[in-house]
Image 1 (tube, rainbow, N blue to C red):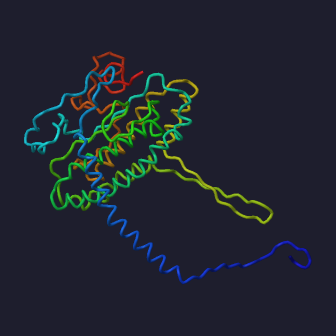
Image 2: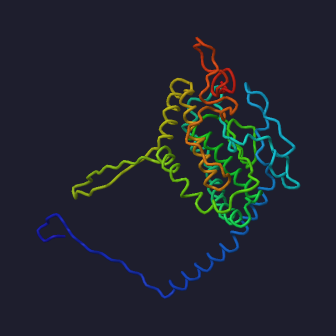
Length: 349
């Protein structure tokens, strides 16, 4: 385009489109969107209430895990000093007050070496459903915020719905890339199921009203920093120069510590056929810490999450002090009764 055929052409281009219909069309879309929110959000909450009424308050898994014995028995009477369950509700389990959030996961015996390579594809239907469930989770949490502020109670049906969303999310995460510990396809349900991964939260009878004002953001700042460092993506970027014109392109990527640990475990599984159990115990500790923080931030419990990694497939036994080693003097074997060990409460397989 230059008269002397030299390289380098500079052009400033601008394209405009003007129409008198844009403003009324935008106004109409804005009004329609507002009406959709006004009508849709109450319907969403009503649907969550309906699903939550079908839930049961924090029952342990219906079946025992091999090697651990049967599930804990349910208690028909309220705890001493506690309020009785609402009329018409299923009986509450005999919860340990020190562990109102329970997260478990057990590695499959004979875990497939290469199935994890396509689990992202197999889990797409779950990702699609969970996208809408988490939108409903956010809306119902806002409703619960106002309910707690004015009444001091978390609406029980919304509580069971939100626990179901967390439970469904944990099953999919355990199947996919937050642990990769099972080949059993997750069920499409908010309820408890016969599955290697389980999550439950005890329903609180009363919650402090004023605490909701600072609970989800101010009080959780220390936890967000730790969890963000562990589960957030550490990004990196580099620049490349493409073509004779010297166009500079920026590219980047990221991988969280949790994702890196799971990837290492799954690569070891691919080549050795075994999931490294010490690494699995550490991965479970990270997931357990993360879900406790989410439960507290979602206003579902009042107990502040502990700053610790409770490793292993099961919740720690509160009857055994953490600093106590029950082994006799001179014994060189693993501590008895600890999660993840073959003597009691250990992994499957």
